[in-house]
Every structure is written in structure tokens, then in C-alpha cells.
Length: 140
Image 1 (tube, rainbow, N blue to C red):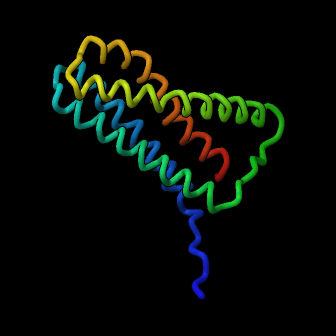
Image 2 (cartoon, rainbow, N blue to C red):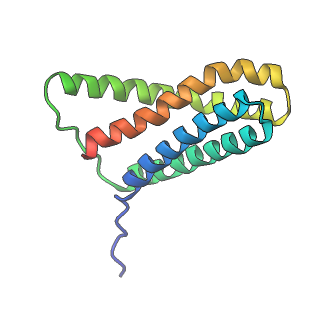
């Protein structure tokens, strides 16, 4: 009989994927501000891929590993839980926003894509970077 494979390393992978997604989104924003639509498209689709891979790793981790409890005390504990709650709520909200925004971009419906992106992008950036911060606070 094989021993169960330890998937706790996926917490590290998730933080890395969130960090990469954050950098890709920022790079995509710079590319589009400079008028480079093709680079923007590649960077944003790469960010979408990172976020999708993150979701697979996250669900796998939480289905197979025990939850880690936050150990901080006092004001930092309150800060952690406010960050965590806003992160979770916005992570759920962002999925349909990202999919809709990407679809509009791929269909070259630029004006509508821009309108949706103005809502989607800050949420996606927030969720990506707070994912890294939450990981750091929880595991380090």
C-alpha cells in the first residue's frame, strides 16, 4: 500500500502563483497603457492561467490537508481576519468578472472590455496580493 502523498507544499505554490498573477496583471496594464494590445493580451491570458492553476492547487490543498490556524494575537489578528474575509469574498466575486472581461477582450469588444476591466482589475490585483500577504502571515 502506498503512503499518502504530502500536498502541503501546495500552499507555497499557491502563494507563488498569486504573486506571478499580480506581476502579470501589472505588466498587462503597462502594456495596454503603452498601446501594445498583443502583449497585453498575452500577459492577461497568462495571468488568467496562473489564477486558474492557483484555483486547482488551492482546492486540492484544502481537500487533502488540514487547515492551518492563524496564531497572531491582538490588533494583528483583527487585521488578518479583515484581510482574510475581504480576500475570500472578493475571490468569489472576481471569478465571473475575470471570465466576462476576458471573453469581451477575446471577442474584441474593446469599449465594453474596458468598462468591465475597470471593475475587474483592481479586484483581481487585490485578491492576488492579499493572497500572498495572507500566506505570509499564516505560514511565516
